[in-house]
Length: 125
Image 1 (cartoon, one colour):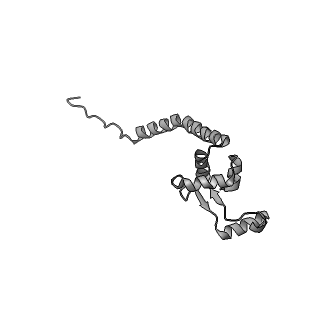
Image 2 (cartoon, one colour):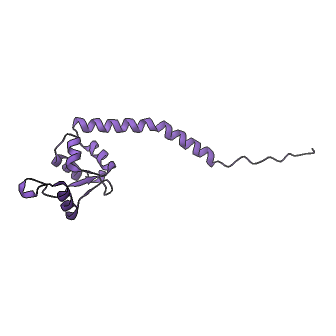
Image 3 (cartoon, rainbow, N blue to C red):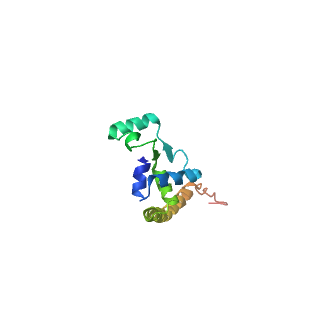
């Protein structure tokens, strides 16, 4: 999991811009991709990281937490050069695996075929 502020820093955008894009594209971010921390989780996070409270310019509301797929999906909705670079990298990596996946599927199809039936000879031996 990665928090919204850390992911925004990684993609070179403001946290509010990242969160805005998540809200504008809810279909791209199902609950298993991104969720908001509960108040209890926020309190634990603040105590573990010595984060200041909202009155002093710290976190004012619970941040979003992104799973691996959510972090990659965020790259597709952001237009910063870094986000575009990450999107292209992912597409290229998936493209490299297409051939290997096709070979695995062909081998599985071959294994799923029933063995040829033994032919009984007709006539006298």
